[in-house]
Length: 164
Ligand code: NI
Image 1 (tube, rainbow, N blue to C red):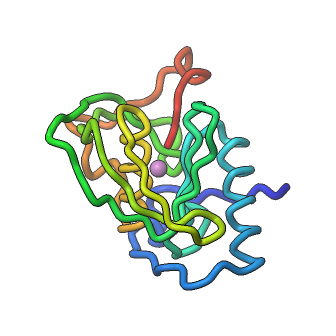
Image 2: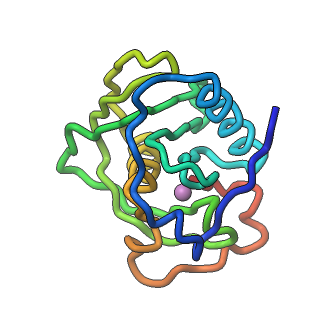
């Protein structure tokens, strides 16, 4: 188990585009394992490779639905018309939250940690998490999409806050 340090807003690496993964290596497997450790340690529900300083198209998600999602070279292939508007946070923007509108339903094509392709229909919070993490791979932080002001997370809410 290894916890990596999480880059925070202002770090130029968070604004860079990432490169596709061509083959799975021992180093990348270790990265993915570390990303889960780092995400759980920070009480997050999603983490993208650039957040730990690696410019590769990889993110991990665990929203508590009993699954550990790994998305390598992901592509959002379908975006539903219906949207959801709600609070969002990010481990790279500690202590802040803001309202972001995301699609309610998306279809994702990606590779898993064994480089096997899968497609996933994600709705609700899972669709929000995948959309948020996919943005990280394009160098986009949710702060660019916040409607209104970025707000401070109030202390009482901290324990329940889900940061992606
Ligand atoms: Ni994030």
